[in-house]
Image 1: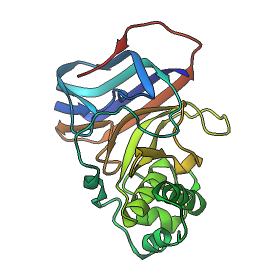
Image 2: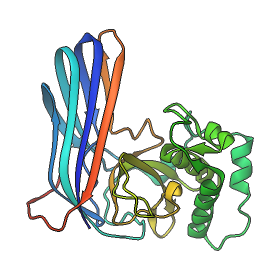
Image 3: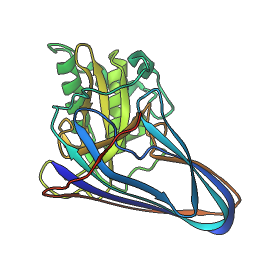
Image 4: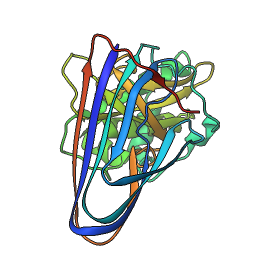
Length: 278
């Protein structure tokens, strides 16, 4: 599938900000399931710093904005050629040991209800089957409902509420997998459409579970599937905060307002030099 992505994030401040330093994890991953073409990242009035590939295999760019600034616009555009790898992250280069992803964070610390949910799967053929069943558990227990949770909502909170968005599904699945001894991590990216064909107008998130013999396998409990050609993978981390596509520090005082617009469209064909970072 050939996908064209446009993603704009606008930060507005009610008082001018003196200086802003940002770390952007907004370049698609390099693996067998996707190839990137014409990918561009632009930060209004920004100075681009050096880029590097971190231990998790993600490409990170540093940007600095020297104020005073009352608005910062981060604009991403490009094309990605994708193919279905049945959720398996093949040909991906990273150096972090998967066992590092057994560590809990504030967002994924288990409570008794999460422990009960993890232990409710008593019969499974192997680790892959267990992972699928845990993902199904999450889908059954948490209804997709925008607006009822927030950025700080934890896995325990989401399970208790029984509602949430893709971030909540991913956090709960990560917690259940870790409780069963399976390394798991949070993945940020884009989704062209949901399983029923409806367009998806926001950045997306899912979980990856490390399965012995296969490596990292993606599970999108929110859509009851594994990532396929409709998905564009950006980066990963222990939880949503750790995997955030945009992280930064602003010097100054004042309230911040955020607007995000994402569009992912299928295109018939495109020709360009593919992008690769080393």
